[in-house]
Length: 405
Image (cartoon, rainbow, N blue to C red; front, side, top):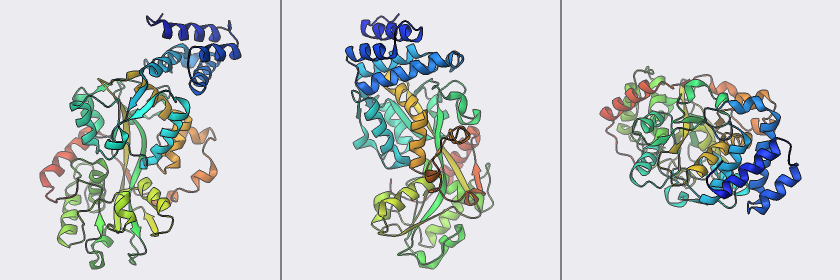
């Protein structure tokens, strides 16, 4: 029994419903009487209904409130409502359709306001960890997979396993629950075809003399996971490997010497205003820019023919999250079917894609908007944290190029 009378009452009602002592309509009515919003109360009813219908699923989850039984899920929702706030950092709305996640959150939990996003939406993965460490404000983080083990090592995360933990491959999550991949993208070229007439298909095309001051990456690769993987993708194309990012650094040094690398970031604004004419960044960001431009300018998104690299991003709960229940609830929502489909709507590959696909839950019109599967044949996956750390160290020792933060 919870020590807080409010939470205790929610748990009592949930237990009564799951054991059949309380009907669905009565359960919903009494939750509303406690002050819960209709979407939040509905979410509790749905969670308890699922747990009651599939009791075997309630025994797993490594301590996840949603996985350990509807009563605990109900208590978490109630506690998050009492916290009243979720502080987000490093999650811009246009990134992988996080706006869709925000909208879903506001629909499900209107009493839990979102904070922090306006000022910190453009944080890199490294800046996110700095914010968690130095300010104590963020409740959750969304960082490149190489930063997950780093966050765990620095004691910045609280272990947490969401209800769909079993759907995620072992190499894409931490065994203790410190972090878990949410979605992934592949490094791609986004080409302003109004300004660039060259048919760009591969890395060597970026050296063309017609591309003076035209090619941009998404920030300092020592701090931004997107740019780090752009360098590593180039390394694979130029004879490098999981153990050698050096050829990628040499390629970008050559791009700089040729005068083709611009210091401007290939963010949405710079792509749309034409300051960057060829961006190298995640495919889902390029595809989102393509949609946002609405033909002004026209964009083409291309996966490099010789090699690209997949970059999973991971979610984590801050160890000193001011709103720990809201943080866990945010994770439950993102790994739910609706949350995962939101990422797909933003052209990111949801980490539970295979499970959803086998269950027939991927809308055909949504799948049709993605690049053809044959473009991804040369995409590499690197998930070994030791190799990622070694590549970061080598890049830091070699990188001499000044880029916009």
